[in-house]
Image (tube, rainbow, N blue to C red; front, side, top):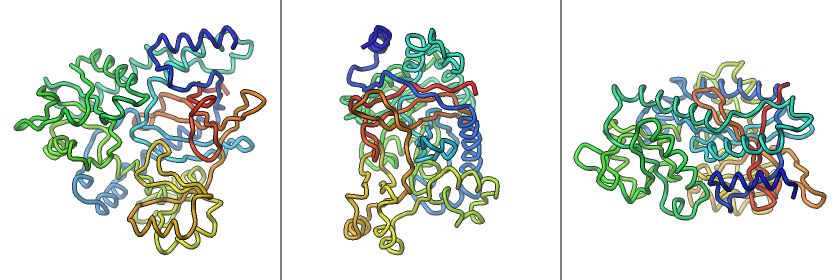
Length: 404
């Protein structure tokens, strides 16, 4: 291990990132023309998924709490992208995630790696220096203020809650990131706490956390549609409309549910959804064709299974993903019979990252944006090509924008 790499890892440890959070001591650089196209794509994505025709269609095809229109905008929304090494201009959006973990860790990783490894490198003049972590915090403070000002007439007196499932708080890799977010919340003037759904109550007209009135919820739970008993106080507060909660079931069914990729990747619904021809061009160019598994397409998808990856519509973190060796007509029929909703998405090639002679890694790109504007980059280098596996020597990958 070089002295630079050793110092990088020590400073990552000193910044509070857990030692079991896998990190690759290498980096990727994304060409400016690729990022410019991604920026344009994100703007189009925002235009399409907030358009009244799109929203109305999704609301009409859902019910209950998911069909309640809301106005929060999640500030840690993430676009996950694969960039094929031979044709990087053919990059593909794999999925959109309104609960995009890693945005603060990425800020620390990029800044610390740049300062320790790249800043004095002979060829660093073609890399845009990442913002210092303090600047990222300022950006997020401004987002919090914008969300507060939009949702409330004036800042309420209740607290900010960072909510996550108990198992994730106790054993997850992002509990430290929650602490970093809590620090930013306090700098924004909020009393802030980190708790699980078991701490919630609906006390008369107010949501409370361990008895404390709560007005602003940063929701990191992966119970995306709030079906658990423990989340029912949150459901009641959501129905009343006086508590800020993001992300939420409305943002999920209009932006994050993986079955939405079929509408975005294929033109079959363009007239209903008011998707314009120029929007269709960029959406089809950069989203692999995706199909919601059903009786009509089961046989064809099984026959061509080598071309697809099969994902649960409500999955996260690679959970439930099936690769071609796990799929056959009988298995797909079982999924339909058990009402387990899956999509089949054309496989999109990842970048190859060579860090040693004996094992290549397979890298993706994660982009965070708020209201159509990119503010953060990172990457994840997997030890397997087919799915995301961040076990060492894989892990999160410092990622930088090129000047050209």
